[in-house]
Image (cartoon, rainbow, N blue to C red):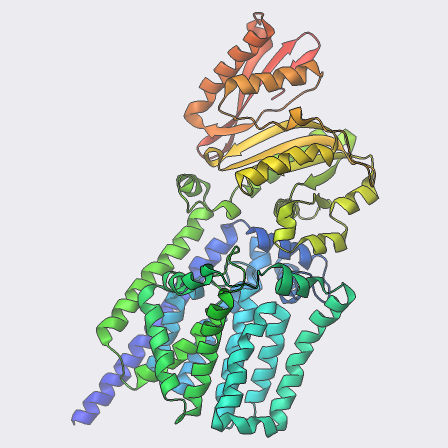
Length: 610
């Protein structure tokens, strides 16, 4: 009788877990859909979109999978945020279902459901798929490889097909596929039950299929001076010991949430201890620890400047399946597990909330005073709208559109739906992020600009606030040596000055020619200083040019600033200006901010055409 009650209780518990899993899955996908439909493209994401419009066997920064998925998504659903991200959302939604299926085979339905829930509560796992990034197909590939290895460990021949297809997809997704290999190699060399796989034709067939995914990447690099491999293996990493890598466990504890991070490492360790008696435990231990420890060691000599906290994500797939085995056996402290899930839920809610705030200008404005300001997600719609206005105003000059760095160029290209070709100046940022070789291949860099459009008028959009202060100053001073007859047209300050853009008119230099430099037009101007604004207007008036001043300011500051600027202009001109010849003009830019302009006619000169 007692046994029947225990079985009935276990069945009810499994049903409760499965119901919770299904409800959470539906709610999470709904939230991710809303965010994906409103969140502006991340800078790298916009560049991958550019690659989707010029499909190739590979690219200098990543293999082709991300671009292909974006291309297929927009083919199915049209050019939009959802179109670009649609297939990534689907893959992200499929991951917890696939993880549930794998865990179900290794444990039971109840434990598998709780493992699927844990993945969705994991901040990195719960948000995966919101953006069109290579980590989505790479994580799907890692899950397929894990499923294949576990099937092979049970003697299932179809496991080789899962392993081969997962390995091929990994190579097609990112160079970081290489970090999935050390754990597998350790398994094959150090585990008695896995050594005989070397003698199986299915295993070599899986490796051959995986090599097909590597082939496009190698062929592309061979045809382009190994530029992609050179950046990933040489230029990007210092290859010398540094202390930055020591912080990686702390970083992972924060992004995974501390209690769940400890729980996953404990589960992998328990399976490591059981690796000699269970081939499945050996597969999980080597797959998880191989990635986690591998990235820690690599972090001691590798890149510490770029965002990297998402790199070890595949390790947690194996960690969760390892945890499912322990939960099914009743191992582990229930209060600790409950606390781990609770803290992870708060972490995932915070991550989703941050992305939702980045998608809302009002909330982004509130974050502007903090380090958490979502710089790479905001301001793109505003700068694109102002650029459209300037393209219309300059239509008679038929200007070429040029951005000062590749991220701004990609964002403008996306917002304008590739209506015209956007070029990028040779900004240091292009080199830092490994995009300069790809821009050169597309002939969208300065060399391509000069080659195809020498002496043609251009409209240059500059992102004044990118990089450090020293880098900004040096870059600003170099602009007049890159563009002929550079003239400042407009400025826009967003989010309390956290993002500042400027628009310039000029001409494309001849190839090999360095224009004469007039640094006066490159001086940074504080939009909150009316005297500086007036001096800029006076200089433009002396040149007989019109200027649009559109500085985004808080609603309460704008009118006062307009009046102060008008007074400063009159003092500079040393004359009274009739009221009918002067007015301040305002236009709402977005919630809580306006653009202001001063229009002042003095003889033939037009100052501040708003």
